[in-house]
Structures are given as C-alpha cells and as structure tokens.
Image (tube, rainbow, N blue to C red; front, side):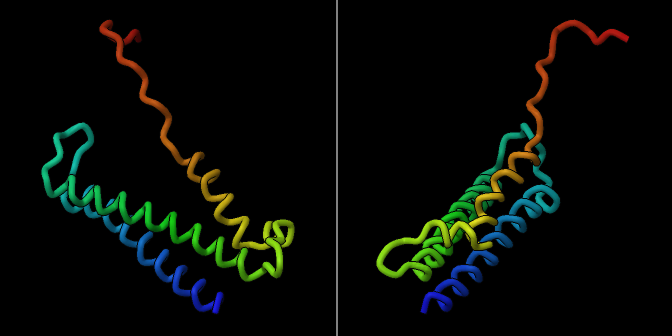
Length: 116
C-alpha cells in the first residue's frame, strides 16, 4: 500500500511542479510581466496559484518522505536506514541547489554618476 501512495504522491508532485514552472513561464513570457511594474489582478491571481502549487508540491514531497519512512519502520522508525535511501537524500539536497541559483542582491544606486 505504501508503494501505491508513494506513486500517487510523486504523480501529484509532477503535476504541481509542472504547474509552477508553466505558471512562471506564462506570467513572464506570455503575459509579459516586467519586474517592478504594478501587477494587474490577473497577474496577482496567477502568481498566487504558482505559490500555492509550490507549497503543495513541498507538502507532497514531505508526504513521500513520510511514506518511505513508514514503509521502512517496524516497531520503531529506523532513521539510519532511511537516511541511506535516495528518497531521503534528494529532498535534502534540493534546497542546497536552490540556494546556489538565487540571484545576488542588487547593488544600491548612488546619486553620483559612475566613474570611468
């Protein structure tokens, strides 16, 4: 039964991540939203859907971890055996990859012109 629930959760993750990526592409390239522009109500709704789908994908990922941990458990939760599996290592490595892709903070603009 745990395998079936795991497959369902992974399918849900696939759908939600596709919705997130498609929503970002849609708002940026199709609707042509530019940074620092006042968002229209349609853009606000699209970004809220993207954020909700991302949050649900994170919860579904947590669900797959809990299902895998429950499948490995007998009378107790074997954390050492669980941490040796790929499903436990990939979500732990994902935030590390995301942290490396974040853009650097914008430099503050001074009132003086740049020097050549």
